[in-house]
Amino acid sequence: MPYSGIIIKICRAYTNSQEDFEDYYQEVCLQIWRSKDNFKEQSEWSTWIYRLSLNVCLTLLKKKRNNKQNITSDHLPPELGEDGHSFSDESLNQLYDAIKQLSEIDRAVILLYLEEKTYQEIADIIGTNPNNIGVRIKRIKERLKKILN
Amino acid sequence: MEKSIESIWKDGFLNNDALVAPKLNDLYNQKSIDIVDKFRRMYKINIIGIIVFALIFLPIAIITKIPYMGMPMFILFLTVAFYGSKFKKKLDNINKNQNSYQYLKTFDNWTKEMIMFNTKLSRYLYPYVFLSMVAGFWFGSFGGNIPGIDLVNKLLIDYPDMIMVFGVPLFGWIGVIIVVILLSIFGGRIGKWDVNIGYGRILRRLETLLKDMEELRASS
Image (cartoon, rainbow over all chains, first blue to last red; front, side, top):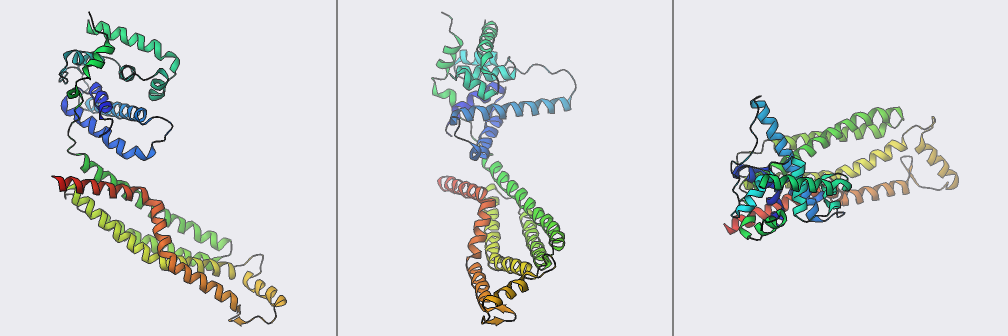
């Protein structure tokens, strides 16, 4: 599948187990297939894939959280580290573990930043004002550094 | 020296193993269910739309004094909805316990049968619609006058030697017959075109998916 790299990178950031990762990956592929006719060439194909992948992951995460809340009203432990070691590169695993501690939107912002998207593209994809993207990225990077250290 | 997060990211993904996509075992299954469900929803909405339109059309035709158009069209819409419902029942009865390829293949056969029926029906449907419209306006009542008779009277003043058949000018009959013949010849094509407007996108998707699955089956 073309652009599978993008989908993998995003799905990894929103899942903690291989099983979830495969489910999310499959759902993103399915959504791309469902929506490809709606793709308008106003943006690049890759930008559209980023936006759609993030939307799917956020929706699935929300659903998962709602399901958990229905099962138990107890405080849930933070979602971390069931299967954090998904890559052979240990530093990358640590970076992903750190990214997973960010809020869902901050995760999207930093992923897009690391993928070298411009502030304008990041703002377009997550639907926000490009003016505060720079400040936000700076803040997220500081937080990541803190977690990594 | 400590690596920046940018370089961790870049270096981490330089290794191709990091981006190995998982196997998508269930994707074709989900795609099949998705296509059939979407089609079923559209088909159902279409049938409901036809029934609602028929129920609105009849009183409007009576109020606007074109009942000769309203009644046949009402009957036609209900007939189309009736056959549509029969096909919908067949669609609902497709066995979901088959594998995704068989499921799609059965659905594909159903669409072919439905299109074939629709094409046949269209050969009669469009001439019927045309005749209903002609009858509606010919025998309608506008301001107390019957437009067909008004038209004949006006024509008789200008062309008193005009040949009449059952009170209608011969060239009128010829014109109507030509249009009816043309519509019955091209009705099938118009019907296919109509199906294509409504369901073309989903049918093309079905075709691609089946082709994909056939290639996979052939290579495995």
